[in-house]
Image (cartoon, rainbow, N blue to C red; front, side, top):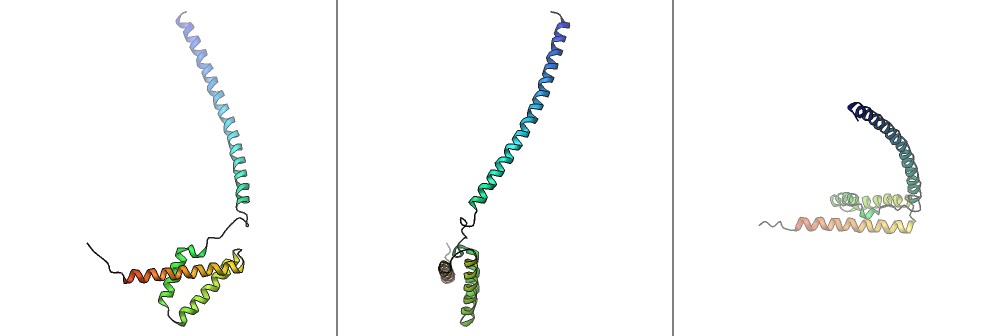
Amino acid sequence: MNVRDDLVRGSSRASRSDGDASTAALSFRFHLGGYAIACSAMVDSLRQFMVWKMSPEKVRAFPIDRQLFLVREVAAKLDNLHGEPAASFWRAKAAELLDLVVGSGRDRATASDEVRRFFLAVQRELSAGLAAESAPVLSA
């Protein structure tokens, strides 16, 4: 073999590797399209699953007595009110919360129990606030 044969073989190898590269690129494009179709099918099936999973009979509203921001907000307002204004505020808030819970799909008895638990959570928050105010601050 001479140099010319090596060049010819090298050039044929180069053209084969160029052909392999274009085939690989074509193959990649083909797989990319298939991948996109598979992803689309997976997203559709996930969407159907979530619709089934999130159906109204399976969704539960977060209990109002565990909504810490709301508990603290009502406790702060009640802490600033006394006597009839406090009782009036509480009755209005209890009616509003009862309507909210009934509107979320609970029956009236369960909603009343939830409003009672909310009232107890507000009472605990008020008690915790009073205990924190009366406790002395100790320093080292």
